Length: 262
Ligand SMILES: O=C(O)CCC(=O)C(=O)O
Ligand SMILES: [Fe+2]
Image 1 (cartoon, rainbow, N blue to C red):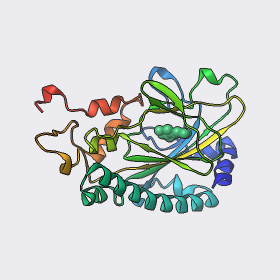
Image 2 (image 1 turned 90 degrees about the vertical axis):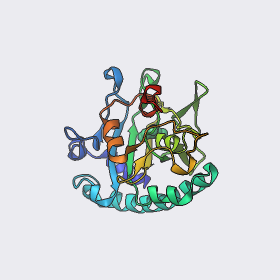
Image 3 (image 1 turned 45 degrees about the horizontal axis):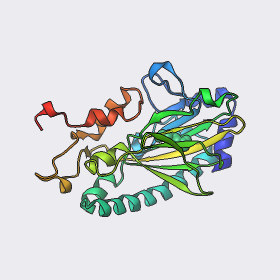
């Protein structure tokens, strides 16, 4: 898949612009503006891959066929992996496994490929602004072996060095909500390199659109009241994209407020 993704980014700009993010959309090719009008130092291609009927006809179906075929097989493998991971997490969290599997089975999934060009002054830019993923889990693959991901632990940015050929799994906001705060979504960012380009592909795993995002029913009792609000998945994503990515601010927004009377 590495070659096919590299080939995509090597296409002439006008070819890539066929996939550009259209007005009012969040999927497609481009870069994103962050708070303060800052742009990420990276070219992204984002698209929903599941459910199939939510695929935008001008994105995945129109990609060069070798890239599309590779992506399809990659997605199938990661779907299987993600269901296993979600099952293990349910067990560890003592969430009813059925409840968890039903939510994630045939869930909303998307991919984001990012090409981070080298930057002569890397200390002045970020490949991706600090954020936590709004997802259940994210499976990251750094396909050309160049590091850059950093995670925030106890207020300090720590570089993540990928073992060759390995995937990194990040806990996203939905899992923090589902686990009623037992798991914490990880705030992360990507630094860029002065000499080497970096390419990553993220696979985002979420509950189905028909599901509700909220603390798992099997965890809630009078001793463990819900810390987060419940909201339909469709609305969860709609509200997310009406905001600018900024640290863990969206998760904060999902917290139950004292004045809610909860
Ligand atoms: O490129 C990376 O390592 C991180 C990408 C990322 O955080 C994202 O796409 O949400
Ligand atoms: Fe991310």
